[in-house]
Length: 113
Image (cartoon, rainbow, N blue to C red):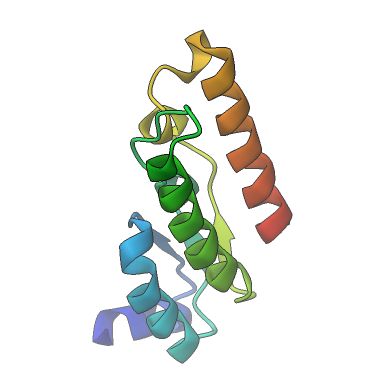
């Protein structure tokens, strides 16, 4: 945390790769240092979604949505849309999976602007 605190005085930002389960701890840190610009990488890593409307997918998306909504409320936090294949493998070749990726991207844009 001491190193994180130095970022603001040096004009540096922080890129974070984490999964939704880790975002609560990240949120607490970011609230303590509102002057540090943060980028959440890879759409916040909703991972291994099957794109089949399953209860497992819904639970994963719900957890992701809740955590990302809290982070998006912090003005210094931004989201990078990348590594979409990590979220939904094979999405370019499957219409249902492609629609899920589209919906996740649009939701992230709506959250973060």
